[in-house]
Amino acid sequence: MIKGMANRLRRMGRAMGNRHHKHGCCGGRHGRCMGGLDHKPLDECSENERVCIHRNPDRQTMEMGLHNGGLVIMLKNDPSDNNIVVGIGNSRFILSRRIARLIEVG
Image (cartoon, rainbow, N blue to C red; front, side):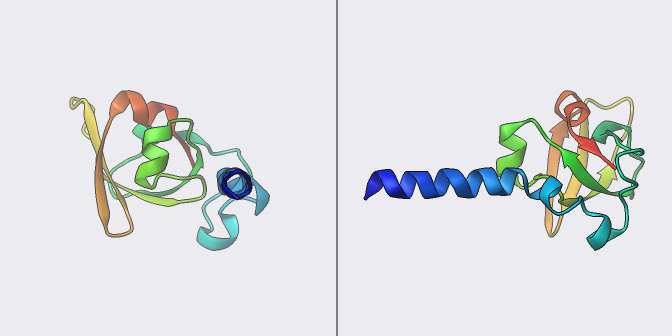
């Protein structure tokens, strides 16, 4: 019983992790993706820019809600500051610039 449930959860996790690529990115939903030609790190976005997450290798931010295919709004990005502030839905998150540099958006 428990082993079967663990396998189902594992398959669901894999499906969610690959959701972005399976559905052809977010171009259909948000109209932002240009087929991988315009991807850049999250820390290079300007303030009030809306972007779609294409790749997020950081597990902790994935658990916070920054998953592949998610729409993110850059709320604060001051180059002299070590942190950035992003919005996802009704939530606001402060991310270190080091982590934001790993997240690929477009």
